[in-house]
Length: 332
Ligand code: AQP
Image (cartoon, rainbow, N blue to C red; front, side):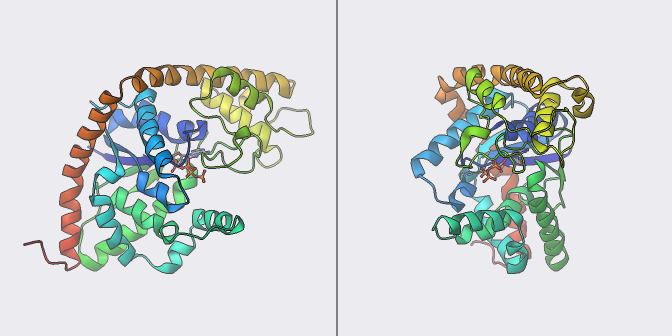
């Protein structure tokens, strides 16, 4: 059976981008077709300035939302990254295989370090080495596939390179994984700035639909989405990114094809209205189930405890093998 691993960072409230780009497919497809692990990758949240209490709160909320969205702990493993020491253990070996140059080439590093510097913050070393930890997350489980949004493609490519390099140098230890993406909405764009992705850590939330937004907030954000000065509804990401984004969202929420849907609209207003209602209906069951689960934190804790136990059992032999392969002496 195929092994799948993917994760989500508790750097902010989960967004519609996270849902359509990743979580929905984990729920509807991945957990049924493979031995799948899904993790709240909290160590990654420490690579930028953060409030410890907020990270803790968001980690629990993210785990609760994954269950609310439909991940079934009977079918897949849901856990928190920092509960499984093997991630940090293997990350160090990945740093010993990776080069400084390939880390610096990562788009996410360039963007986030640029943002930190622009706001007068120092850039954490862990932001640079982040892809080594992400490679460890994936490789520790002998992962075949990594279902992610398109923004993560470069990191998965680097993971592949590191796995191949490690295997060539030290003998075969790691499965070489590949990234998979959803067919529609692999990149959901910010409603107010449709040339940049909808990201949960962005400061201005006006263009971001959060999974826990109520129906009125969703409607308000979609109705205020930036379109353009034209009138015609066409699906053209280069010429009309805001309109294309709305069509992508509508298609992802209703199951249609974005270019075909465009033909049914004579105005941006009507498109926005239908998109808003489709998103409200898409998120309604997730929000309702989240409220039920949040009222029973003991249940979520137990799911995470069992998930970490299972994940540890899978990762430990792989990481021990990697430690032996590079020449480290086994513990006595
Ligand atoms: N806008 C998006 N469209 C499609 N997929 C997306 N993903 C994230 N945003 C979009 C996918 O969701 C999964 C988990 O994402 P993450 O937690 O690793 O990243 P993030 O939500 O982008 O988090 P950050 O820390 O808040 O980053 P920035 O600063 O960019 O906003 C991944 O599979 C991701 O592809």
